[in-house]
Length: 354
Image (cartoon, rainbow, N blue to C red; front, top):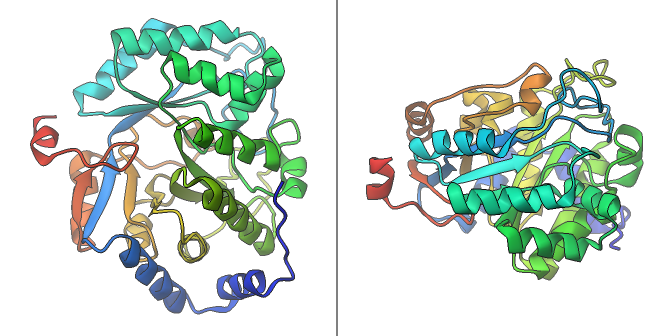
């Protein structure tokens, strides 16, 4: 268990930078850090599809408008064939991975998940970026298996990497307030560290704007950086604001603005000096802010997002095309390049054929 000393000079300096630096000064610091990590004028993106295999969930997170309780008439579990069809549609557009996540569904047996992974690899082979740390903790508790065994079984069946969903704010006081039934900070980061130990690469996220303090946000970054110092397993960091409008319990929370997003992204680039890539969250912020983010520390434009359900359920999402994404990147002064989950590049000839 790591602890963050909020009285340390380093913590106070990061908090002061976040709260007091001018927007342009903070952006300039982040942009310099971005170029130090990525000296070539390239911005990457990925073509993938977010497949939510079930919306049935017992975590009851106050910020989630997507989930349905067990036995709700709108609850679902996708069949293997439905998931396979979605993968084929993704591959037809040049997709190189699927992001597969769902709710904490108490009615699905563990073997179903393993069979799903095997089915995908046999019939619709693609990189599987799946099962957030919160889901892994749920599997561990539900099926009475150590987290290490859960990851080992999933990996053996075909899981290639783990997404950073469910991170929210990695401060227990915040998590106890907004998601008390879901993995707490040490559990969530413990899954990430175990995945790295077993050779899986993962991403890490932060959803802010749930009434937490600025110091809570900085602590989240420090906790992530400490795990990365030990493992080096994080490929990328992604942050985005809560979309409170359609949420069950946080609709009263004031929505944060674009300036807050840019400041948060920029301070993350400065603090997370050991994480190579930061994504622009155009899906929640729109292309105009997403483009500006490329000068505030982001070197990646995220995903085409063929399908997005969770943010959409809260009432805020943006859509795009490959051509539009590449135009936005070029207009910002960069060369767009397609990538894989590990940030290796898809060769231009292959991308042109897609």
